[in-house]
Amino acid sequence: MPSNHPVSPELPPAVCPFSAQAADGELGEILKIHGPEFTADPGATYAKLRARGPIVPVEFDNGAYAYLTTTYRAALHLLRHTPDLFAKDPNHWVALSSGQIPEGTPAVSMMQPRDNALWLDGAPHTRLRKTITDTVELVDSHALEGAVVRIADTLIDAVAEREEFDLVTAFADPLPIQVIIEMFGCPPDLGLRLITAIGKLFDAGADAAAANREIVSCCLELITLRRAEPSGDATSWLLAHPARLTDTEMIQQIMLVAGAGSTPSSNLIANALLLMIDDPAFSGSVYEGVHSVAEAMDQVLWEDPPIANYSPVYARVPETYEGVRLEPGVPVLVSFAAANSDPALARFRRAGNRAHLAFSAGAHACPAVDLARVITETAVERILDRLPDLSLAVDRADLVRRPGTFHSGWTALPVVNPHADPSAPPHQGATSWTPSRPPSQAARSASIPQRTTFMPKAPGSEPAARPSR
Ligand code: HEM
Image (cartoon, rainbow, N blue to C red; front, top):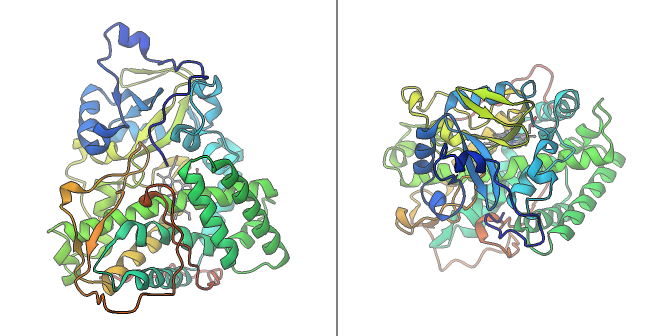
């Protein structure tokens, strides 16, 4: 997803909702949570912002403004008071409805109104969210783990004999979307089309609109197929749900889960692998069993949450929080990264304590935390088992973070594989497609080997216990 688009000249000029306060000298310069300075060291910007107050004005894309929470307490206040004091519905965003935000910016694609659970409030939200929570409940963790291992193995086989490769494009990016598409019961050819189209949509290039149409048409084909032949998969369960979703609602829920589930999981896998490969406190100790992979994941969820800033909400009426006045019509973004790094929490922030906000909280909290943990931990365990002793191929200081406000991850993690046998014949099993955007954001190498049936859990059965390294 691109981060910095020039503002189109045809649009009404962007109006900063904080310009009056800025002119009065009440605010200093409005800080940016996008662009090279922020991307190079987000923590430094969060510290500067926190020094200004618990909720402060920011520019989060060119010409796009919001309030941002900087403390844990402020983040929880917002999340716990949605939807009573704050609305999730982006129709409240004045700059968007008055056409000041250029189409194609991440701000629009990540924050525009859509008929899915993420952007609705009250009873319509509860109805759609329940279709997702009920579906997620039915996923058998053992079957899911088996699918992750199989997909991981196919991806690992493709690079196992290479002396150097990029963990992001070869593994962290493609794995979660392949798992989720399989969970929806997509046959391989349809899955390949869907993954290719989702990659193009995230490119936000000239063919993004065509990609969106292709995604809708793939989802419709999938729905038609599963309606004719119900099976043990998420599409069939959503279709059978008593909420009786329309085809349009079905498409929106599938797109929501595919989007919400894939990029954050990819970033968590990459951020955790970096910790385990390069951080002296974790690298050796995971192999020696001193630290489990689960502990390393917790550490990453505290220190580098995959969704750094998101959950935009809108004050229903003028609100005051700890002396800060919040005007309706302006998005208030929750900074999960700033909340987790709030110095007020210093003594709680450690592995084993899951009070971090990486999965959000309140009415819109992630409904798939257990599923996300199975996907990411299994993937990380598998690659560390199959390819031990990986090390960074570049200096840590030369790694480049993904640009943008919302997601936190790395554009590439080049690694050296000391056990590679470059004389081995090239691996033929996995096909891949070449992305048109920077590889870290796409590169969903599209090989969907075989389908697993994600059979419903037997009544009363417990989720699979996670093996600990
Ligand atoms: C490491 C992986 C993940 C992280 C860090 C994560 C984090 C989050 C966060 C912060 C939100 C709140 C967004 C907001 O309020 O604007 C959210 C919502 C959501 N997530 Fe996750 N997520 C992850 C994986 C998944 C997976 C694997 C799925 C599904 C298979 C999923 C499905 C959803 C859905 C459907 C919502 C919207 C819920 C609602 O609005 O009621 N997530 N997630």
